[in-house]
Length: 417
Image (cartoon, rainbow, N blue to C red; front, side, top):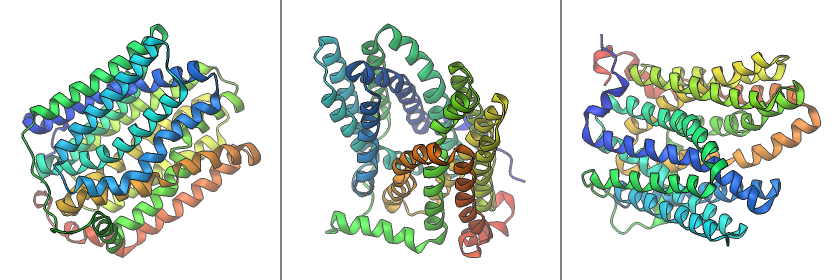
């Protein structure tokens, strides 16, 4: 029997330790900045609608540039691209700090920063995923992805916002200065890493041809395109809107205090962190598709608890179930892509993953708010759970989607890695 690997075994290797340490610091800074920028936009505009436009200004270019970003990632050193992205984002935040301290910051400058951030995120996200199998032993891919999820979920989603709220109450400029410094430290970690070569590619191929190659690879592999199509609906109808549906249920339906909203999100952060520790310390399952989709379906089903909740404690169950289940499946999925996709295509395939997975989310947010207002949160969530669960169940039962694991299911555990 293969023994379990400690999630912290990653730190025994120099390159992964530098990469994940730098990104943990950056995630912390992002958590601080998310609170500070929200307050800064409201202080600058005094408008909730303009805050919504600001959020869209970052997400739309992220989605729009992902396919091109993936092609760029498969042309150049992934480490260098991440370094450029960190350095540029540090300068963008520093520029906002300078304008804010000088008292001349305007809304359009915040929008411009959000757009540029989204564009560089479109390069950074696939670059991180594509760089990981270049520097991490295959047996540690799952622990590495789990630690990344832990840093994003707990460090960036709990610790960062907690300090961000305190700092922003004192000075939004200081809070944003912390974020700019975190990008500098992340860039320093990348500089300390050894150089990585450019990926192999066909000479003379155009950017469009390379984007098409990534799309064709996804289309040829049933396990990828079916999962992406199903996940797009899950993100758009349940997971992304949960950030507004839980507060709505607590404040509007149950007339709870504002503090309970913070408790609900904190519970999700803690539960998600526990989920990453579990999945990071376990061996990759033989039947990855089925384990992954079982986990995601449990997360989807948690929406029914929110639909029928009549007390605050029932709402608290939602993040306790939904967040770790979602993260558990995500870690298996990303590790699976890094194992099964050729490295020279990994940037493009990862960008397609992000593009499809997030593509419907902005629309889903808008529709969720409108539909809940017209039909009620219960009817909306029951319908959304059915729409999202059916494709997942079909993938669980599909021989073609599960054929990628056929060889693994017949192998002894010690030979899987």
